[in-house]
Image (cartoon, rainbow, N blue to C red; front, side):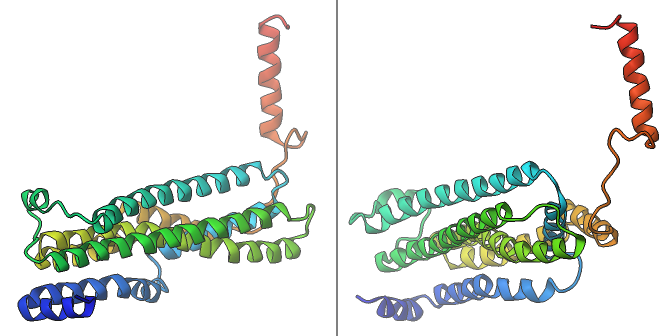
Length: 274
């Protein structure tokens, strides 16, 4: 029996399954355009992080030693790698059940899964697999773009003036920004994979989980403590002059530096030297 025939039979026998699937598809595919539309205003992590990353690249272009930036980039690559590895394991587990040739229906019934229709149950597993696969593709594309960004950061010339540094900073930002966006999309796939898995218990659970995933993501984007902190940071960064003026180090005109020298000398004398 083909997939289309199975869906038609499900629509005849259980309209709730089709309604729940429609709600899920609307939430899953509609969340991204909705987020882009509302992110034009302040107050969303997506928009605030874009400003933070642009500020990072501005500072990176004028920073003499970029070891700090390379460590941050390596951390981002490791995070994407770990998420993609976990995603691949989940895909293998779901695909093993779906294509293994034998569905442990008794065990699944004991877990409360709706296995009244074997074909429909396979479609439910396939939906989870599709969500996880899309997330894996997002992580892979994110990793590739992060590698592009690392190469771009390594190619930056030294001793740039402010105008040249701004141009290079914008160029690197245009590589880093979509990389981090793809990473966020990959993480978001976990939410909708869990919502798709709720269909195993029935269409009502699928509908509730789909709407719940959108509400949870929306709350974390706009109302969480991290969102409030990033909003404050964004406001500070927008008021900050770029590039940041270098601070005097070991300068005779710097009172703090002179005070530190006096304190170090006093400590040295008190210990009787080396």
